[in-house]
View 1 (tube, rainbow, N blue to C red):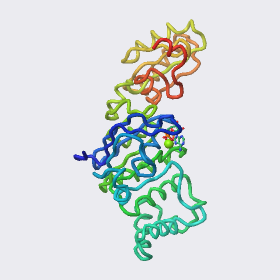
View 2 (cartoon, rainbow, N blue to C red):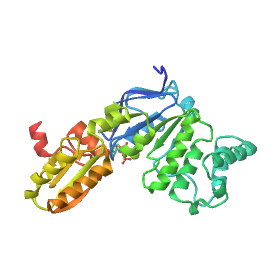
View 3 (tube, protein in one colour):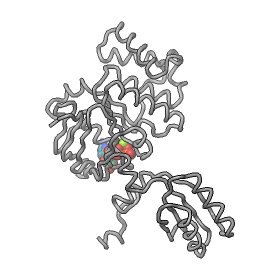
View 4 (cartoon, rainbow, N blue to C red):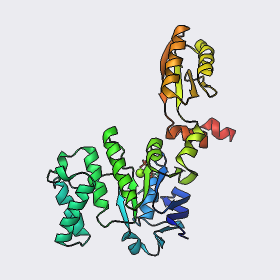
Length: 326
Ligand SMILES: Nc1ncnc2c1ncn2[C@@H]1O[C@H](COP(=O)(O)OP(=O)(O)OP(=O)(O)O)[C@@H](O)[C@H]1O
Ligand SMILES: [Mg+2]
């Protein structure tokens, strides 16, 4: 079933206490690519990663990693993968170098090879200058990079990264992204889970969207962004009575059809030249004396994708009203 795919899952099922965490989950990751698994809290991302990395058993369906069935050949799968969990696994008291040497010994590399591998990885992840500093003194981004390095000790052919940048500041996030790109340039296949459309867009050549344990979309980043219509200008007013005037201005300046959210007193429309459109909308509204509460540019988020695909936002499950209508 592998045919050029480093990871393949068909109809994966996993239940916890009778409740499905995965409910017929499908996935196909091409060799040598970064594949994004995008979904909100509780969607089943970590469960999928844990099954694929043989940490938990599946209840139904089947999965192959590096051409090997995860249920039947877990040991061989484990020899070919790396995993960076949602929470950092490195020891705070040890230095970066000591951490990597320790992981090397855990993987039976032997003292000399473990030391040499640590030096290589510290260099690869730009941590040489901080090699002999206690990890307790590392920034969030440095820690995540060390985590990545630790999962690369055996140069795995498939690497699972579970929300590698959640909680990091933008600069650290950028550093982790660079490291992931370097890994893939070296031939590793990466499955990356994330709650950020932007992150999946920056790194992945293909994205699977997961909701309630099922894949609800599988597309390129551009395909998903097209679905939600790219960047938007957004205007919020204080008074409902102002909405029609704002719609008129936005329609005149922006390329796309404006949409109105009556409840949030919000008008938004797609734009291509982001800054020019924003400036023009702001100036025209001011010229016409429209009282504006807020105005800005918004990049499409996971929330926007969800709204289009499922009709609800990521946090909101079906309300009673929607259930009655369905
Ligand atoms: N060990 C477990 N025992 C019981 N329920 C679990 C367990 N692991 C996960 N679940 C449940 O399975 C569902 C999917 O959880 P999972 O951790 O896979 O989601 P996630 O997409 O990784 O979420 P997050 O973005 O918050 O990490 C959730 O409803 C969760 O509560
Ligand atoms: Mg998770």
